Length: 261
Image 1 (cartoon, helix red, strand yellow):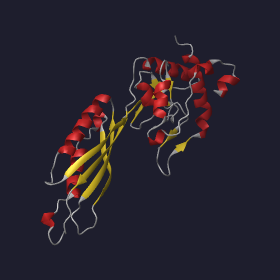
Image 2: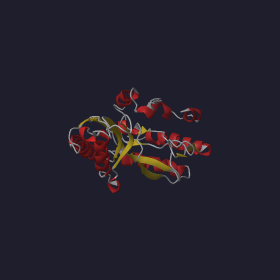
Image 3: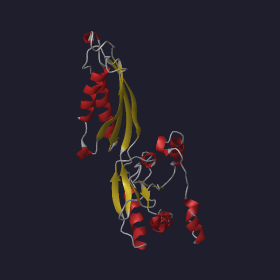
Image 4: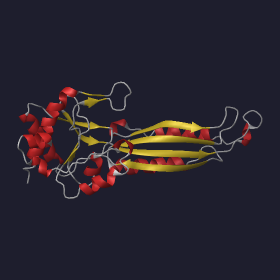
């Protein structure tokens, strides 16, 4: 915005700018603000990290979080194990079934990333919990995988255990909508003016770009400076040298979009 002002461009007047501080925890408060701001907007540009070789993000996966809470029956593992009903055993069966749902070629991934359960090694576990991360390419997959996860929760492999399921697909996928191709065309044209060869990238990570695209607003993400390896303790980085180029790309794109009827 500062660059546009300093160069005498009025294009900054056409921008509704949102700074969001709760994206990493699911945009609990800002989601509604973003959706409201989407009303009447022609385009949405999101400044998550750009990708190497002048990459921008044109598609993102949706994200789901599910929790399996299993109740069993405790018993002494040495004296009378047959009286127990192992919640851990039941969770183990469900983990195998959940991981069998993976279909990487279709862009679908299911990962049981956290398990907790039991009270001691010599006690048949009376309870256990599994937390599941799901990534989907489109809303059709979201409905399909939610149904399958629900079915697994309802199946009982260890007789006498009970499973409750909570969670949902909380962040929808960022998909191309009518007008997205035009937006990409304008970004590529802006890049050419700056000596950049813009390329499209799809990614499994989610972002607030999903909320504008699901409102029907043509959306492109990854308009920020180059960065990689998000959430890595030691490898995540932003390349400071790319700030000028990426800032120019964003400003030039806003100028071009301001002229689109």
